[in-house]
Length: 71
Image 1: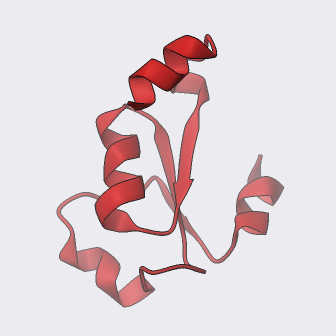
Image 2: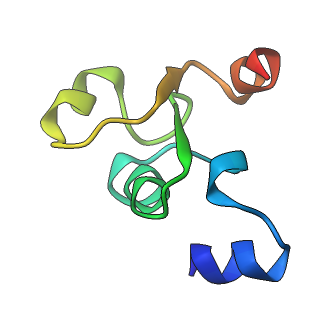
């Protein structure tokens, strides 16, 4: 689904990021699509749960504003 979206807007995975609050949906989908991934801790995944997953986001941020400030 992400690949279809990227194709539709003529974007490339190297210049696109997935920002989400769930490791088991948002982050894994971004990783599988080859995107930079940001886990935002204002949602459903807590910092202490992150180590339970075999995969890791590119960055972990406290809020969406932290992502905006970093780009």
